[in-house]
Length: 192
Image (tube, rainbow, N blue to C red):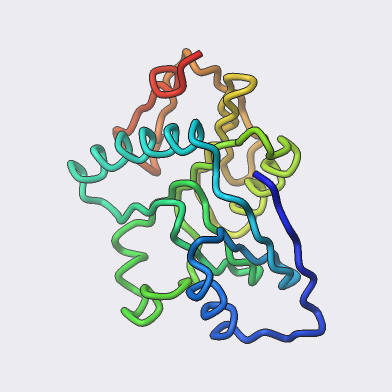
């Protein structure tokens, strides 16, 4: 996806002002990095959008059966401990963590890091940028992250205090102890 970065060091936007900027520009995908720079991204291409909905469907089917947490699509934003506001393609938070934050904050960009995230590399993303984003998720408290790269047909699996592993699309991904019982064969979702 194409990206525009706006350096805002002289603006000093409050969280409320940033939230209102996002609300008033819903057609844009907006994030904020840890230096408070605003990042405006184009919508994904149709192919990536199709991958995202299939991933979300598979994940939500598991989540409804287990009822262990709350899942989110790519429109949900989270304020991380490093003050970045990010919106992963898919994310999940345990019920225990979610229920500790107020209804007011749940309606905003809550100060919470998801326990699980998926990012899907689109044609205009660089793998380097996406890997840096995954490292940011893990550094801020995410317990499991999957970076899905359709170009190499590989998923990079991120966990705290571990080097990322690479799983080809023809092997099953496991939710391990974070997502008990969740398994995914990406090759069934992202076809050749």
